[in-house]
Length: 211
Image 1: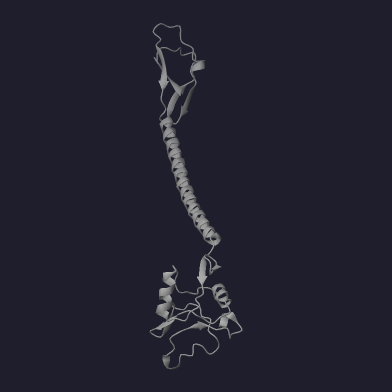
Image 2: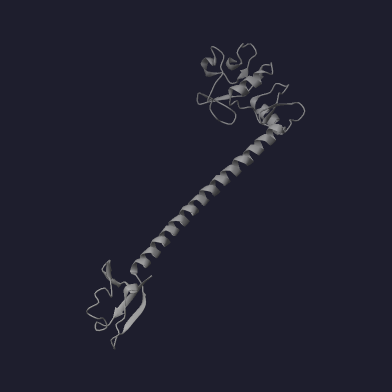
């Protein structure tokens, strides 16, 4: 904070040019107080009081804006960290559920593969009858969704029906999804006159991915 010096024009001797050394800063006139020598003349009146420079207010405003910007950035980073934390928590829970399913044993007579248990029926049945039997045991007819699952089911070493069906000329699984990947044997499907109504995995094939 600067100090302004106000003086009576008659309070200085004409023969003392160095009594005050003036400096012009930003259009403001300031006196060098340490070189000021009061005149012995009567009637000298000098007043010294604080002078508030308007630049200080500008500095305060700039600092406030910088603090507000820093606060906004920290708030944004906090929200991003919270989102990352929530995502990681969700992934952790999903992983724990998958591990639990992998570790969960199957009932007697069922075969474990991935997170599912498979039951191989020993009776012949229609598609509708087989589905009813599966649901009675808490299951559903198989829907093959990967090469690994195809190889696993082929590993039963039996001709097994998978109860796929045709709808509007398109082969579908029992959940009404179309065949995305097929493992037909050479020459299949041999739906002569469009009358083929069932599909099975055959052990006559040498390649489980073409069975």
